[in-house]
Length: 156
Image 1 (cartoon, rainbow, N blue to C red):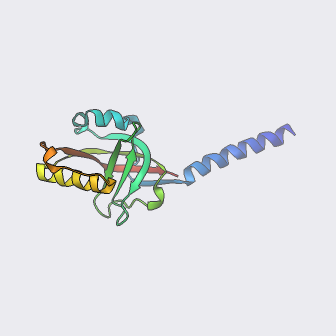
Image 2: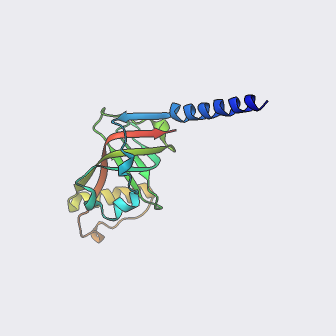
Image 3: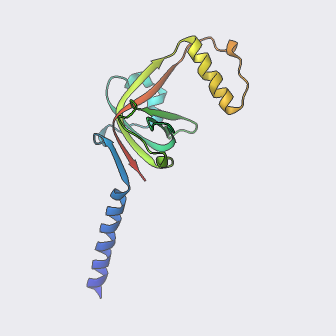
């Protein structure tokens, strides 16, 4: 009886191990877990992370509905996220990935907006949220940051 239960436990562990890997999607190169940094740490001082590849992880909260060319990851800090962006067709993130965990290795990219583009972006966000927006209240241009991945693992 003891031998049967040991065999059952070994089989169960093997099946569990297989099932974890069976639901993982890989894109590009393998992710580099040695460079894992919290999204909140990156976003607190993003310019410090522009030079070298980094790895972040989070829950996928959004995916491009047209081409699957971007996704957003929720940060470990509430109401903060990071956009993961590829050239159209390089990687195609599935809509079904929403709610799954992702680990992403890549290079942080800074996009400096003009004052006009900053106002337009903030107006668009306010409109999406159903809020009013006063363009005259914006007096400085902003930068946005996104991660351009070399490797992505989505764990479903």
